[in-house]
Image 1 (tube, rainbow, N blue to C red):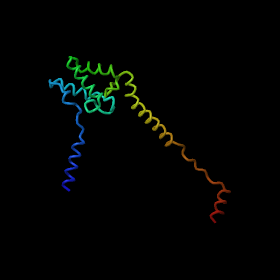
Image 2: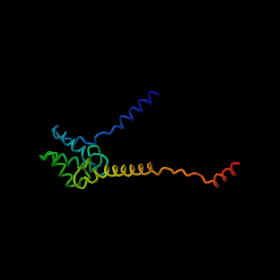
Image 3: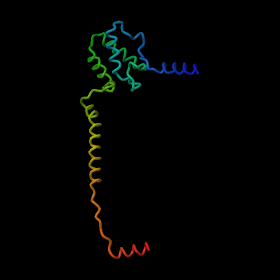
Image 4: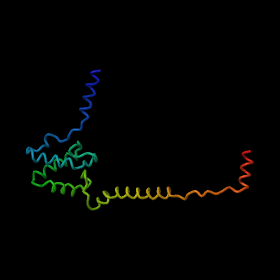
Length: 152
């Protein structure tokens, strides 16, 4: 049993995702490296598509990490690095796209559809609940006799 527990702990520890940054990519200046890592966590790997380039082992992600570091070493600000990368690869490369331009439609569409659906549901429930009160009609004498005959 202790071997099983030890194996389980080892398996869980190895399942923790690690950054894919290679030692030869790390910049000697800690402040620049910290900025590079922050930027890399905001850029999408174009191969994996659901990972940042900081977490991806894909060759394209490595190229993008190196590009980010080159741009930072050349003196660009963080915003200028994002502009350069999005200018080259489009806004798809951003893990959190900007809420502007055509993206604004995507950001507003979800809440708009939700409000529309809630409105339609409210109208449906009101109309259904209101309904007409059932009008009680008295049975005719012929109907009363027919019921008497059937029930004995």
